[in-house]
Amino acid sequence: MNNKRQNMLSQKLSNRRLLVDLLALMFGLGAWIGVNGIYVQLPLLVNEAPEGWSLPAHMVMLVQFANLGPILYTLYIKYNKWACDKYITYVLLAAGAMSTFILAFLYDKTTVIFGNKHSTALLSLMFVTAIVGCTSSVLFMPYMRNYREIYLVSYLVGEGLSGFVPSLVALIQGVGGNPECLNITKSGSNELIPYYPEPRFSSQTFFIFIGTLLFLCFLAFLGLNNLSIAIGERVKHSANMETLPTDTRAPPSYKTNSGWAMSKQVYSYLLIMMGMVCFLGNGTLPSIQSYSCLPYGNVAYHLTVTLSSMAGPLAMCLGFVIKMPEVNFLSGLMVILIALSSFVCFLAVESPTPPLQNTWLGEFLVVLSWILISGLIGFIKLGITTLFRPDPGRGLYYTGVATQIGSLIGAIITFVLVNHAKLFHSYSPCLLVAAN
Image (cartoon, rainbow, N blue to C red; front, side, top):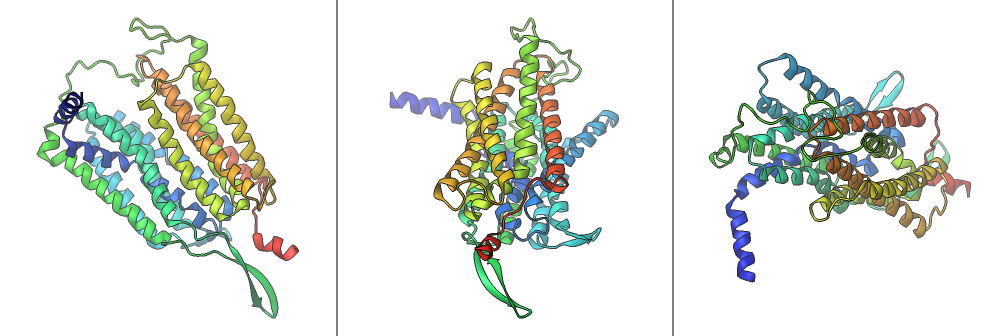
């Protein structure tokens, strides 16, 4: 039996080139690692940035504006007959690596705009990395069609690791613990100033590490295009290729001769569900995460950001090992997601004094809630995409449209609530100490 398994494993490995797998994985890693790397540094950045706790809301809006990248690319390939995806990808990966290296030295620099300080260097350089991530969905993955289908899985694994790797490194980095209130004398009067212990290594070191990974991703893509072992794994596309599932010219169909069938009601219901999931996961919840977690301490916020960033990719990996659920099961998970999202929104509104503050139970509940939310979002999105994948019409295209619309509406609404309606309030441990 063991010999049979070894022979099967040898046969699988002999049918592929592990170096090409590694190159494809590193190529996928470069898709979102820049944005995810900045995001997991939020527990350290929000305490120093002039935007304070509203910094995540600004970052979420920037990611939505970065969708300008795929829009411009779509217009470019539509009106320009000479469209070389390879060179555009080179430019994007190089820009992502350079912007992250520059960010390592300028992330704490601010400028005054309209009388208020802003983290212009951090936000503008993050915008560059966000363009790389947003454009990867229409450029990086389709480029992998040039290679045998087995390497697409390696690319997808790398794309999943683009959230896992920064989270793991940030978990090792830590935040140094919760702040201490120091009694400082200023102008003859005593003031309590929060002191934040140093992490194991600085944000500068972290961004240099992420920039190095992005540079390796650039080299990996260079290898895919120039190494003879990678060129040998390419496929030739025939002139009469079948219509791709995401072809926007294909008519919207719910029942087809190919064996795929879905009622119009379920079709619309799943698209609405995808829009709601992205409304919460990409637009609303990331913007208020600091308000729901920071009142429970820096450690709770740090664990929330890092562990929840891991939970999403891990939940999506379940699709490789289990049978994907039906619509009713996804609906049940959606109910749980809405309940947990309502809970963390309640905690954010109650800031700076939410329930169970300064207790281990409060910290445990807020971290666990965010981990479950991230896992549910990843699994539901994967489930909906899997149900639409066999659609020979425009199912996957409309899924992408629902994703973008839900994310944009969520980001705009929450940005207004955070920055203009002043619905959420920051927490200062030293003010409470002084009051007591």
